[in-house]
Image 1 (cartoon, protein in one colour):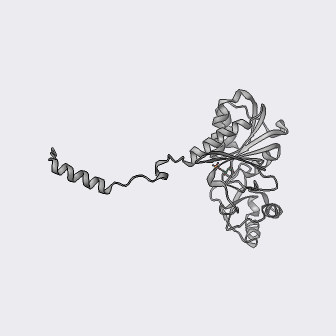
Image 2: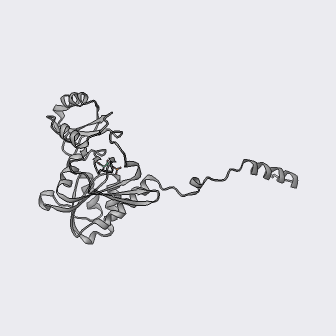
Image 3: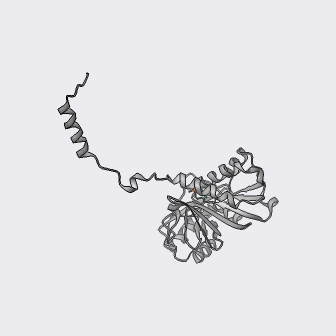
Length: 250
Ligand code: 5RP
């Protein structure tokens, strides 16, 4: 149907339109970055920390953005050590040589994401289930560069369930010990780590002393690794925010 507006109808229409029109607030007017865009920005900023030689590479979506950025400067590095099978595959796909940690020895830098981090540089890691290999590769690096978006920075860790990698036969025993510590462990369903183990995600922990808790959980027989990285935290944290990438150091 052909709509024909006379002048009076047009005026009524525009008055009604203006009456309902709400200008955007200052916040709405700003172009907000998505979480992935903040992850990508921090991943790119980490390239500044990449030395010539061999580098350790973490696991997860932020680490994947880092691998993408690394691909652009791959001529600068000799090889990478991967913290998971998934990371090794992604590195190879972009043409970066992957070597065994035993072949690499000590490295200058390890770059990885985190699930939570405090201003003291203690972290929860293992959301992707690669915590044990991540901790091993990180231990072999002089500098841990943590790349996060701003949602990961917390005052007290524990809102994100704490991952614990466990030998399968010890699952129930370890779960009982974690309950005694005040946690609520939940078996990560349908998941097996690269090392053939299971993960208990421990809910309800308020981690006020991360170093003490890391030590205590690691002592439970059957625990392979707890996803608390406090005894050896990050050295540098690059945090993607709405205002750009912020750096803080130990
Ligand atoms: C994997 C990890 C990751 O670093 C952590 O889960 C953060 O992941 P993402 O970068 O996808 O937010 O510890 O085991």
